Length: 616
Image 1 (cartoon, rainbow, N blue to C red):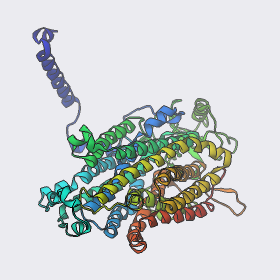
Image 2 (cartoon, rainbow, N blue to C red):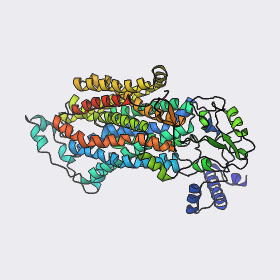
Image 3 (spheres, rainbow, N blue to C red):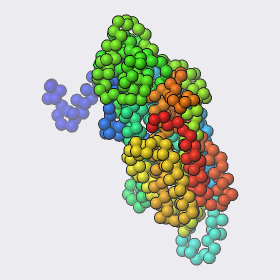
Image 4 (cartoon, one colour):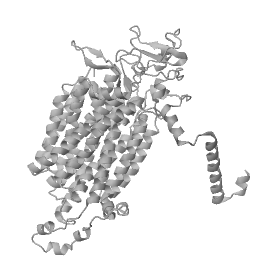
């Protein structure tokens, strides 16, 4: 109180804030270790004295809570929208040829295809106190931020490091241009700028943005599945896809606005820089919203033999991120052991104590019964298996046939979608609006191309919006028509839509048939992961000769399998980057991109008919 009397007004509040910060620092210094090495070791080894309540993991989540958990993917799709809409035009403008531009897209998948499954295995083995998935979401999000900063500023950084700048020569007097009969001679005589540094930084930003945005979806999706009950997973995945669609819709809509004519755009340095700057802020907010949503159960808690957190609030489960065929698990209150014998067939799948896919809603009764069974078994060891990293890495190579079929189908789906997403705005600018990305700045072909790119952004906004609407209904469609019909049907709809767009090449078709791309995106964003989660919940990855489900043998990590399925986007992008430039060069038109998307979607539909759907 003496301080309050001594300090008055703004100066007084400043001094009071300073004193509070000083007291907090002194208290922290007295109670906590400031040795960074010790802090890291504690994080890696796990704080065995912690007694945190994780009961929130084992309850039904509301739609609002699922939206919060899925917020990160909304930010990812914002960044992905900026990437797909502007990276190809940006690379073409600084002098990268079509054939070479497609090779740029090969760099990220070349790294991601091998690294993404390894990151998934590492997340299954992560021992940090904050959990297994969130550290990887945070790490990859940092890479996305660097990519968002480098892509729009790569050319400027190149000029700063010595690239030649002939931009002033592009600003020809328009009256002189209009007086010339053959404007083509001006295009051909345009000096070729040296953009070596600009291309380097732009490509580096593209690789960071592309790899981290795609790879970040795997831990984000695994995090969602980890904190949801099995009966909530379909609703959670549909919410995840809805958020992705909304992020894409608003992201592409931002690209469709002419920011050059706004005060914000002029202050931020133009259309592209304005879009990327705003999306960077939105991305940080969305990721923060997800990271602060629910606490994960750390790996050391799952594996700890002396955990005391059961007590009617939490039952640790082998289905929390991994499954095997063991039928014994400990309830850790007073070291009581729980077994799942044939006389207990209906125990909830949420706690990994089942041998079928039925669900029980009263989790408190289940936990109480589980904690009191076999009360005479003292000092029983926890049978929760935590396999080595090498085991998870080997599980990438030795996959059951059911997962291989999902991977092949997802590969075709992503190849079809990548054709649309990465090259769509270029297709609209050149094939629909008859523009030229390399034309002289301010000329009619260049203006047509810019207008086409912005119009293509609105088409992609429609696909993202349709993705959100379709995701609202996909859970009902699966219950009504079964998973196989929904999976195959969604791919065929996209196949027909892309074929019609390639044939018509009109502004109206860009908007209308882009809605079929949303159906496709919702399908590949939901169905493969719903099937993988279902396999893990049922501990079943194959059928016997009679068509009956066989219990899985050996432990598989959910994070690893989700990452394997997700890594197909990298393989799809890599394969297309090797051949798409050649296809465009041979055909002489970017319409070939859309025709290829239609064909690949049809191949995916055929592959989806062979997938094991169990009882979905």
